[in-house]
Image (tube, rainbow over the protein chains, first blue to last red):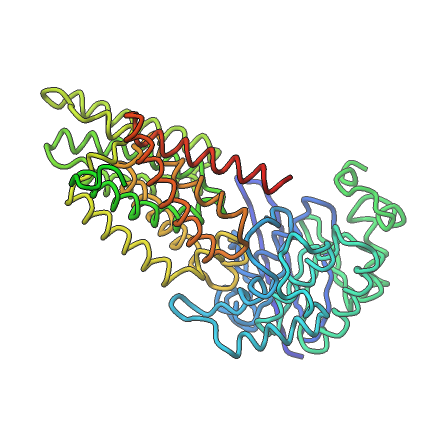
Length: 247
Length: 264
């Protein structure tokens, strides 16, 4: 099977503090992998390395056989929405079109605009295309950012906590969309949402500085307690993760 | 308009239009990218360039150009790469720039006659040479924005995502700060270093209340700038008070009025 991502002996340190230690795993095309683990465990850092935003201290990351920054055309990325400025003067269509960026001095083409229309329709938000972002609900906003990630029509989709701060109804819909998308691409999702993750993904990777496991959901769930140092029932019921490391 | 028969009033009239264009275009990015403090730091640091001009005996606005650009680069590089908070870095560079200006002026023999106009502006002292310089800098700003609006908008909205889709984020961030520096230079003669930031923010934030499109925001902001800079100029002429401060006060009153009206 073709590898979408291959990570070997990856280490990442900041100021002599180890964030990631000896990470080894592969992600294959048409596979849906979830990375779970406590806050500060390195999940977002790992995702940022796969997309090329951070460079490892040592070790190797390859995306479709290339360095991450060389493979960006093939990557769709949905970052966390922590510092998002909802008041920014931009509408839904323009936001998604931004995902089609080519290079300086190369404008957006008619084909780009058609792609935007296509993905807005596929994610059922065509009716919102002229809306301002501050008029959208959390779920609608997340679909807009998903469309922005997908409009590049890459082969690898990276999602960083996509269902945080959205309502449960949208969460279910969101996973349905991902179920459809995984037929076309590899998906890597960082999530705290263990209950939902287990029923939709192919494999779960448990990360807390080291990668503890990366197996199918049933197998992985057994070792989650070791990673979190906390009973899985508590984690699944949404106990705030910032306290879990103290358990 | 009263006084238009005088050359200095004609120059002031044209200067008001030229500065308003720069303010409308660059001010829009300053407001939407939320780099008001950083821009304030660049404008104050530009005083070092004014002082250098006095020291070297050349037009201080000319020396303010490279000085402002270097200050902008330092602000951009230091705030991103040095492990001190952004506001601390801005504060340090701001005061260092002004201190350098004071030292250069202290080292210059004689009395710095029109120093006050560089600090607080005097649109009535704008010369034909200043107008040509403003026009060239305006053209540089407008061309840059026409060519790279996509990149400036992308990095203003979401730098992390911009990097992922291949926008050279650091390059365009520094280019944007360079445009801020050029705008500062254009504005020095009109409102002075101390009040520059008002013209770079008030027209844009006022326009922001009426439109949700970046290009329209730039145009509306420029128009607001032109109308109220000319109004300020006229009022200052009638009342015989400082033109720079009057322009800023009139802009601020208009902003407050529109803000209240929009929310009632």
